[in-house]
Length: 130
Image 1 (tube, rainbow, N blue to C red):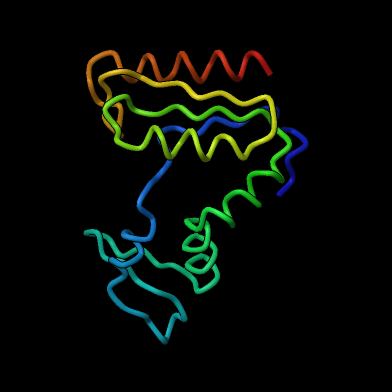
Image 2 (cartoon, rainbow, N blue to C red; image 1 turned 120 degrees about the vertical axis):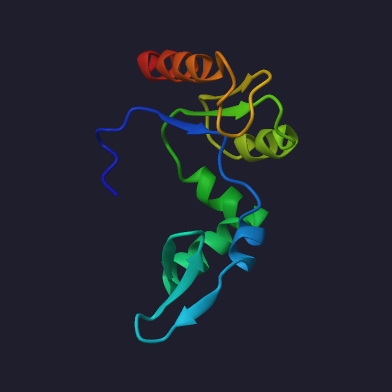
């Protein structure tokens, strides 16, 4: 990917439990050469995407990939999420500058009153800074 025009990266309560999500693959579609997950809509995953994403859940793979990121990284998590320890661990693998922000009383989708605004404000502060 061409990252020369990207100055900073912000992750919003990044997906978690990817291994469990991929256990939800419904079947392999030989004709399309991809895995299919049915979440009310059919979601195709190529073999390569499945392998890379599933591998990304391996802490050693994640650490190696994070070290390659040469842009400022901020992870914003929902305060009611159970994964703040995991996110802190993940953030530790990125190069400086890096930051973790918590939107208190928010769930994964930031649907609670005021949570979305706090999420956007945290994002904007980081983007403006870099």
